[in-house]
Image 1 (tube, one colour):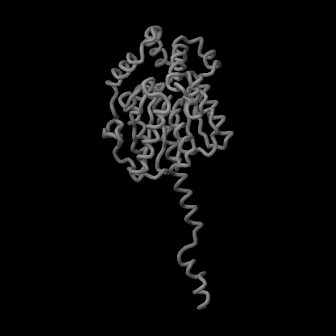
Image 2 (spheres, rainbow, N blue to C red):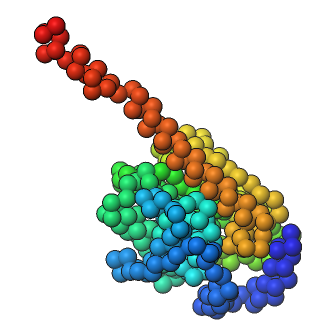
Image 3 (cartoon, rainbow, N blue to C red):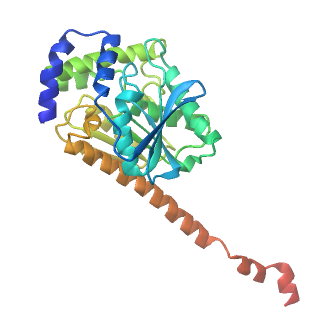
Length: 324
């Protein structure tokens, strides 16, 4: 609640002025100067087939397992810098290496540029020898929506799917329903944020309809997706968005873990150093990923137990039976 009050007091006067996208990008970059990776997490910057990317590697993490993380920012804001600290904290808790990418943003690069870059990164991981079931795709806000669109694109292309998907307040409906506008109308900052986000959706979609399934994943058929974790706060702009998507995914038979928090602002995960609920949310993501790996290991044990042993095969071979 204190974080919400502070952000409202600090940003409402600026939001009323409707600053330009370059000005907002600069503000976020300046703010990111005060965010640092957690102790014991190492950074490796490189070029992924011409796209800026980073490996975030916690000490003692399992090097075979990867979190492909797509940052948020309404498809127009955000960068590797703005999310590096939070992704580092998440990777450390999950004990996984995280790959983050500087995907292209609107309005200069509208849909499907961001999705193409996400597909490029996922396919690059496969080329490096990572197995699909050792990869988890995640993202926050627009990055969460992009992560879900990535899963849909892979499914539609009949490409191997990752082990799971994670959406932290994912943006799945770029139309931003009128019901959402009405719900947040009593809070000025949220209303201004909602109106800005609705405008960014149009910049991203450009020539594509806002209802295109890979633009607004809630419009897609959601069958055959891997297990999903969705987190949201009941007081943020995209709350209705997340609940609608979760309900539709469950109706399609997708295993969905929905975790709802109270009274937190959108992007609260980024404030993990100062907000206990943000650390709690990241811990719950780690618990989910641990559950994914545990389920895989249990399935492998069951499969192994169902396979006949070599000696059993020999005893039951036609040649051996003939000798007996």
